[in-house]
Amino acid sequence: MNGLRRLGRPAARDDTESPAHERTPEGSRSMKHTLVLVLTVAIALLFIQCGGGPDTGGTGLVRVSDHVYAFIAPGPSTEEGLGANAGFVVGSRGVLVVDARHTAGLARELLDAVRSVTDAPIRYLVYTHYHPDHSWGASLFADEGAVLLACPGTGRDLELYSPGYIEYYRQRSPHILEHLGEVRVEPPDSVIADGRAIDLGGVEVVLRCVGPAHTAGDCLVAIPGERVLFAGGVASCGYHPNLGDPGGDPENWLAVLEEIGEGGYRRIVPGQGRVCDPGALDAVSGYITSLRALCRDAIREGVPLSRAVGEISVPGSSGFEQENILSFNIQACYRREILAVVQPPFGIDAPPDFTVDDGGGSAKAGRLLLTGGGGRMEIEARWEPTARSEIITQDISDYLERYLGGNPSIRMEAEGTKRVPVAGDRLSLIHI
Image (cartoon, rainbow, N blue to C red; front, top):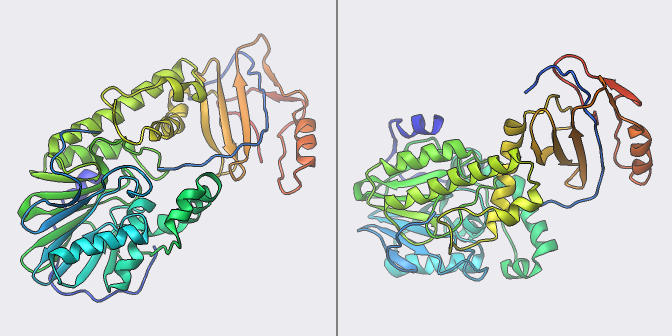
């Protein structure tokens, strides 16, 4: 795995006080039967929101080791920061803060906790990933003069997805938006290389870029001399892990968890939940593995997503916080696994913003649902064997024309108006 190889690279040392850098945001087969297509176009709004083990210590400010402190969120509510943890490392020459919490008010609590321990300057803030509950309080630390550091991908995702989160809150959870107040998203000042080492004065911190895992730009913050690791969203303890990020990679995530477990750490500060030992990571790995297997089975059986979200539960996750994330995790697994499981006997020619969100069955008979057009359009395809050797599209073009007559901003054309021959290994369902 790429993540495993990167974890093994020699560390690049940073023994000097780094000035603020200029900001840089960063199965196909031939067929003997006919496939009968049913295409429907509908309006829908789709939004994506973002293991357990033995708990160690309490909430609030927790001293993890001689120079390492965690700030553990007391719970999953909006007022408590959605359960997102943060922390800091103190050396003789300054402080490195890990994550910034969800709001300016919660960031202020973290800053006050730092000041209750030391008056040393805050030299760095490290983003473990871009999710708002870990990053949107960063402006307070930027104003304190901290250099904001992140792995590749995090700055880009901050810029790309933050407006969508704000719009989601505006439409679905206005009380959260009111609680957030004015959001000032801060891109990183510097995109770090994997293995960068920072000397805080008697305390070395090593930054490891292991994404894509939980997100595209995951950063682990290790304090090797004290055998402590801030794992960010890669690890959770008593919370449902969030598998729904579009930049995530479950396979590499599992590899990263395995490597962390073999890293000799004494204490892990997870992205959510209380400080734990490395054994707690087994629950996260088990959660990811079990959920993917359950979703694959449901897809093979043709269980629609709407039913799967009400029927699938992950063994060992009873009592985990943020149970609402499970439905998003199931949706994400469906999106990632459908084509590999079903292996439809045709290709899909659709714009890049269309994704396969639902479906099931096999190459012989099945169903796919594509969503796109800004999240407002759905295209459904069904296929099953018949005695004919052609696909009868009936009046798809006329149907689309009638639909699009009321949507002049959208252009769509069907390839073929009456019959589409089934020839060769691939068939274009629709071209938009």
